[in-house]
Image (cartoon, rainbow, N blue to C red; front, side, top):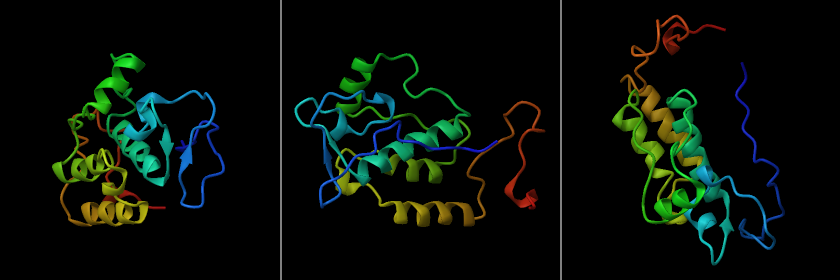
Length: 152
């Protein structure tokens, strides 16, 4: 019952500015890859690319493990994401939480939030006392516990 996040073996030495440029043929996790990583002329990866992937991870969590772009091929995903397609707002997700998630998918890396900023934005959503995730539509509700009812 522990969520583990990995980079699928893609850990590499980055340039001094934190950017990695693909120099050899590698397998891409297309469904989690940012626009600049999907570009066929220059595959760029940075901390801002990781922010994109984190947004996809949030979407997966809120959809209880749905597959991003489920019925699309990798080639179609690449074309559509480069063209502006983004994952839709999960049914049980508040507009405020989706706004935070959607900011991770800005087409320009420098316009995406930093992880520090993301943490603050998520904290603001959580502390706003508004319901950010509606669990009432999930099965019988016995598998889910509101944060206010959680005790260590």
